[in-house]
Length: 483
Image 1 (cartoon, rainbow, N blue to C red):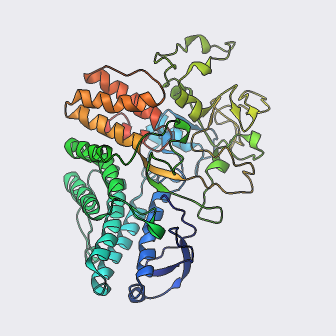
Image 2: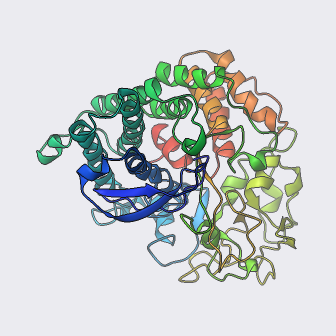
Image 3: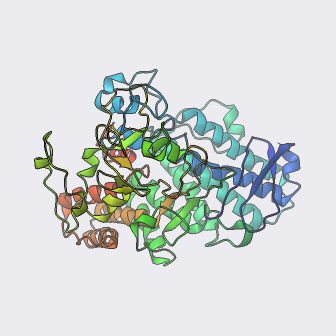
């Protein structure tokens, strides 16, 4: 979100009071008290709602809910965890990609969120139930804004379930959750996702002020709808939602791609901020090269397959064939387009004032054979390290937690969502225009393709633009390119 969350403890019947800072969405936990007591104070209810905002963190690459804490790109050929140890941010995600027979009833829950999601749904339904019981004294406008935020997050969690399962069990009230229910159809599941988003769109403000800055807005809900409806294959709904965000003129691409995912700018539509005293995260500690003085980084690294997805600065494809041999010279990485350099730490690039070698016995960046060690120990098994999403200003990685923001939705994604929906609706000129706006930011020439050729161009553009932001695996599933 666009203002910092300091600390948060959310339990089912907790009350957490605002601190004295008036211009942050700032959280300080206290002991549990009764559900009824929460509703005796409007600030307490606000803080109750704030508890649901942590779901953005938990389901981000900085959290642990999405795939047991692993980057979901490790379920594609674009990111590799190098160790042989199974478990958290270690060897086995890649094994699922290359050997699906390893997915059994014991291991198949790797990216399952079933229990976690329904716990969260219960909490949100508890809130809505309590609002009916204890919220009569509050103005309808205030209650409607609370409900709109909670229903957005209920939609967000059902979305996590829906893109994993072909229909799920739908609970929209606390009473329902005490009863056995059959799974709903896929269509019914997406109906509820859309209904909750539409309620949020209709009832959230365009902007918040003061201490409420950073809360959900109408445009965040519209942007999320443009994403969700692509998964639902409701092309017109996705198109209309994306188009509404674009035509609002509230957002624009930042000039420098390096700043695009950092938040606090014109591109960030839905953002969650962190703070040094909490909440914070360990993303840098997990993925930095060992040259940072922390021996347990480099857990996962970008692959050559991902590197070859980038075009050259003139929009043509690089011929990588001469560089596949053992005695080959270093590829001319500098010829690749700017997004590559902003995303990948490659041999010869600079990382925190060090020229990276990324080679066997390299001083700055050391190569380790895939699955050679139980942990990666800050080494690379691909010849590359991740740059994107990292905090290059963080020097003491071992001692200081990471605080860079998570941007859940940015404007570039909305443009790409519109491009895909327009393509599905046979609006080819609009599809090209939206995609080419994203390319123009990094001075790549416009694409003029159409039909299947356009969709191939589009898939690669989305892969590159949104690299390592948690999209690719799920996009491949809905395109039926991944299991």
